[in-house]
Length: 357
Image (cartoon, rainbow, N blue to C red; front, top):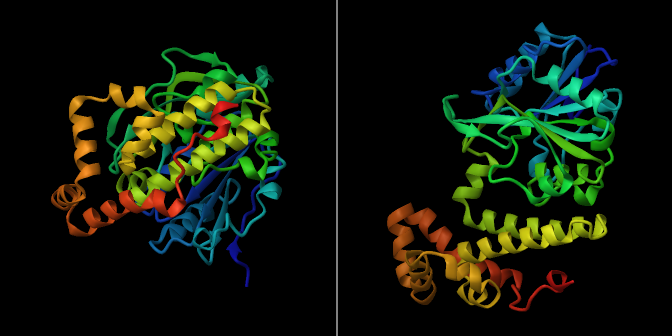
């Protein structure tokens, strides 16, 4: 029995492949697919939708759309959940993407709101071979699709240097806004594909070793925030998860620094320190904060420093605060995560030598 359904009849000579990864997006997947199908282009494109064996009926919606648009949609419906097995999916991404010039990404709970998105980005990248990463401003929306705020990375359309992209933004670019060259995407080294469960920043950084970036000031997509089960939701609610992700991201910065031969070393060291410092705040590692990040700690407000100190020196008060704020189950889980996480990792007090290189 095949591990994935693929009854596609789409053409192979396409300019853009749209990759849509989804799981338990029954409420949102229709909007995401509609945004892709509404694109107005003078070139052919295909929509590859991968559903990781969603139990909520997401796959049925994908099948229905694929039946009505067999020339555009490639449905990939897993029979067994791949994520829970530590796998990406039971399909050959190289085979599916290699005949397209560009790759666009839109996760199943996000959607495009500009029917000219693909055309504008393809026209720009065709005219600028030095550009390896094209993105745009976006909207943040809630689970109902109501706009919460604008996600602005550029006040006006402009080029970004590799250093600017790797330095990062106050708001990271919405993944659904991105267009990249397929040949570059398919050459990302395995060790640089992810940082924990984060994949968009590693992709951006890698592409900055290939060229520069361009941001359209137009808001072309909607990024759905804090949907149940999403990475951002889990990062906010699950302390053990967020701490493990901070560590994974810091480890990734060292790997990327080695790959890029120190070209962005100063920037990466600064980002490492920021994540490591935030981990100290989350885990109440007061000793490390005062020893390695003294200036950062001093800049926190008196109230923040007081709360950290009370929680660090008076664990029962910390437990009581979490119990009142989060309830018994989440409060106890967060409390134990804070006090056990770095002990379980054998968290060292000495400075990582990489930071001094």
